[in-house]
Length: 495
Image 1 (cartoon, rainbow, N blue to C red):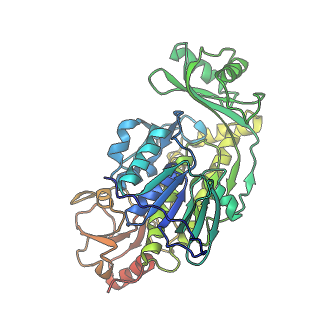
Image 2 (tube, rainbow, N blue to C red):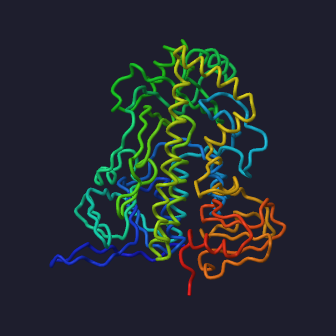
Image 3 (cartoon, helix red, strand yellow):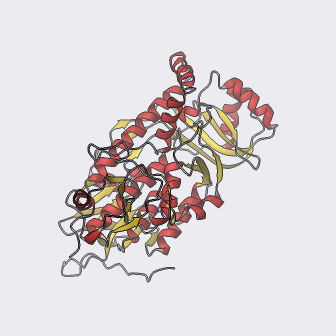
């Protein structure tokens, strides 16, 4: 159901007086990160406007992968049943540097698979979800300027229109205009190697392709033709010697590289999409400057190896949404919004490091190939394979909430509770007190935190306090201790 449209007022009138704040948050960019953030904010009745510079959604169809943690987040908001029918499941293994190892046994998630889904489809579904919750999306609106003061942010568009909101979030990609306008440094390494990636059909039998690829991959990394159904193949080949990187690649470019490396182009034809990427790796020095924040590719870029990029951005949005909403609704503890950078910046650092490592393992040089063989051997150990799989899929993340049991700071899996499954209780984006003792209470925080007394819950703890993003903020059985942690994460009690 669409909410009534709000007409944005200009930021000042003819006398130079500032107009009222029409929006609470303006989001630049309507990719997966921006759309997810808009939806999360709308769960808390925050007035949201999303500005997208492109007039139409991307027309090319690129398959992206939703890893376990992102699938869990979709389940937490009741989106998974809407998303899964549009994708194709594959096992949760072979992610790290494309080393072909099976998924570890008994991964601690109810969603232990990868969902391959066309990127325009997941963007559309998330945008549709945000709009249904009441967010506004305006296309063909490029942000060209911003000014912030104690009361809000004035955003200038390419056509001269000026809008005003309390906060601005740049979800506008690797070349983020918002980040550049803020003057936030984006240190890291420029691209050293270029790779062609695309999806297309092939004209020879799959068995023949598989045998040739296996032979070539002993000496050439990255290189693969990976089938994913319907006669389509994901094709990755080095781009060395292929034209100007500013120009989009052609099918002939792929054929040329395939012939140079494999001695055949496998009869590839009918491409669905073609792209070129480098291994540039950069991380914004800070995620917040006053009333302006960054998320997704605007905050971090890295090679696509391991398929973590889209997932990292969506998870940024999930971390930021409830905190920014709390700030706007007036109940956020003083430092809550600062925990966005404190928690997500180290996560991005780790992703950048693991993609650097994976990129090295794709080199055909003798040294990296020797390390690759060693890692391949080590991944036969379950502990190593599990550690790398949990790292890539983000289910191993533990935020630093201070000393405590290992579960503290980690996400709680979708355990069974008396009302079904845990994630079904998190659709509204509120906190949750799960009490196996049946003695505690959310008290004056019940307008922000739901309560479930369930002695049968599959939980190895007497009671846990969950944040809206599903991470465990407290473990114990003492009401006074609980109240202190409720204040830490959810502000002062009502009344």
